[in-house]
Amino acid sequence: MVKDKRQNTKTKIEIAGRVCRFCMGMFDFRPPLRYARNCPSVLYISYARGLMRIIEVKNQEQIKIVVSLADEIWHEYYSKLLSQAQINYMLENFQSLSAVNRQIKDENYHYFLLQDNGGSFEGFFAVVPQPQEENLFLSKIYIRKDSRAKGYGRQSVSYIKDFAKNAALKSITLTVNRENTDSIKAYEKIGFKIAETMDTQIGQGFVMNDYKMKLGF
Ligand SMILES: CC(C)(COP(=O)(O)OP(=O)(O)OC[C@H]1O[C@@H](n2cnc3c(N)ncnc32)[C@H](O)[C@@H]1OP(=O)(O)O)[C@@H](O)C(=O)NCCC(=O)NCCS
Image 1 (tube, protein in one colour):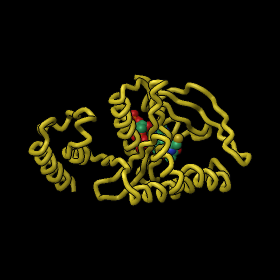
Image 2 (image 1 turned 45 degrees about the vertical axis):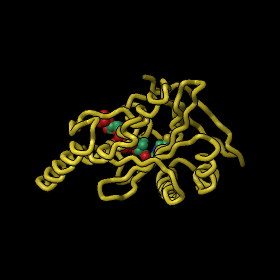
Image 3 (image 1 turned 90 degrees about the horizontal axis):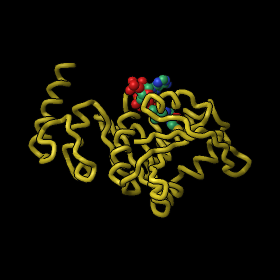
Image 4 (image 1 turned 180 degrees about the vertical axis):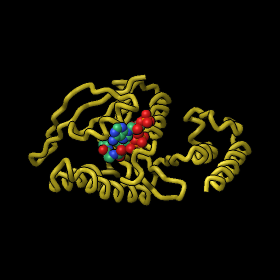
């Protein structure tokens, strides 16, 4: 199996070298995001490292995949932290088909899907530029259970950092439930620090008890 993997990797790097005038097959070199967006070799670089392909959500089919992933992951993960009623309320308001369409169309959200080597969609994230604060808000990042703790969160944040730098933004912030200790530990390992405690009313008597975390660069 290992042998197969290596052969596979070699083929893909060779393809990358042939098609990419920025990395020229040097797969440790990451082209700047403005080039990488159109660079087919980015796919092969990611595959060579055994990581995910990151795809910006552009159409209804992709939005439906986001909505379905959110539904699966929120019910699986948040059941230990929130009531079913709150999960359903939040999904309807923040992660339904109409909510995601509104966020992308009117609220400057950028959604991305994470796809593994086998073509399976294993998670997603969404960011919102906040130019006045020179900040990028990481509004959502959700990875399916079996794909957690494999480096995809770190890979996503690295991509998000490039996205922010490319937009001349100097930090990334996020909010995370204060009892979501596993994710807080992962964020801290990646470099985020707790900046604030926030309790936000989100309607119908529901409250989000969060930390705001920040990564500056
Ligand atoms: C939070 C989340 C996005 C992190 O992504 P991930 O792919 O699991 O994280 P990674 O594998 O990239 O791990 C990043 C770092 O955190 C560490 N880490 C991950 N999970 C950890 C845990 N439970 N405890 C301690 N450290 C952890 C990893 O070891 C890694 O550190 P290293 O690179 O120095 O070894 C993902 O776990 C997730 O979707 N969780 C469930 C949903 C959720 O809570 N989303 C966030 C809502 S705010």
